[in-house]
Image (cartoon, rainbow, N blue to C red; front, side):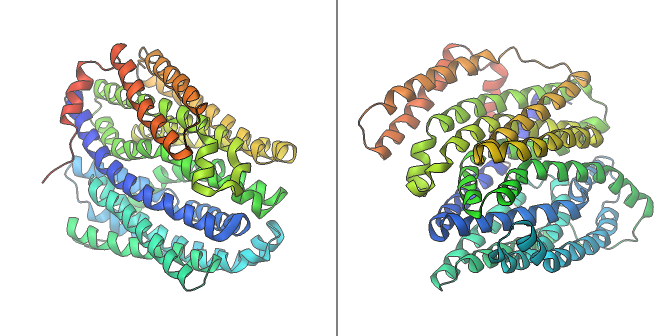
Length: 491
């Protein structure tokens, strides 16, 4: 199998996911700005705790099934096996786990809100959030199969559906005078809307045919999924431990400050997340065919493009932290600036981790992901416990970034044992980002109005970065050929 053609295929899938992710992210981005401005730091902090609890329960009760479904659907298609048994086997497990997870969160809401976070205001939002757990887990069943079919356009649009409905419902509830409760209802109902869309999309992709559930297949799904589920739990801790300990040691207002940084720096990881989703089923197929040469080519080129994008983006985010916070969230949230800068550095490693995880899972080594993520999560918990009382939300950011660096180093060390890594290009984006940063610092010293200054900086930064990359010959012949073919899949 030609590695260049595979790269183009992944690029097409990534472009679809990226376009949908970009549209969805901008909807979600402005949605969070509306939330932060409309709720204020304390209620926005409570809402962030709701997101955290939903994330914990969804990850815990998923058992890693969506990724396992994707893997075996891809392999069954490649080997021309009956795929309907996968859905029929996974569906009863999902019914049980989705029901159990949502019911537990509903009845434990009071305990978490009062005994853990010392905030009675969070009780009802936690209960409403239990609906999001239920429909999110069911959505994972259908999205897992669709990912296996490599229906990236559908997956991309499902994210837009979820975020768009959440945005519109939030505006509706806010206009009716509902604040934190309205925001939570909008959040939970948006998962129901996405679930309905995925069911319809699934029926258009393949008929819903119920076969007899296979016990051996269930064992395979869980055998592959549980290590990823454990890794997912650890990854969720990595993502939310900071908010958890901030809520425990400090106040909901501090949680609000900390979480205004996340939607901005999260934009930097969006492209990598899209690339990782497109990469995973392809790696699974290549691994099933034992095509080691193509595996190495695909991963190295994916890693290269990831670094080319994330280094300048993170650099710009670090330098522009203060004006970004002021323009988007008002000066009321300026306490978030130092944490924002620290997290923007961590986004470099977050982005590269998602690419590494797709490769490791695709070559059927989910236990390695589980092991490395648990090590990083334990470090994160320890660091948060000690650093938050000392340095507040900045300590939480330092703890998270340190843990992400460790996770990336462990992952890349393992990958080096499987394929030959090529990092000969690394200095070119570093030099280009440094020159871009110097120009940004100079413009920040000028007396231009804030918004105009930001526009000038962004435009000049993009032009400078790619100009320097061109002069340094950062793009080889294969890169240029792939870019010419980088168009969405058309039917």
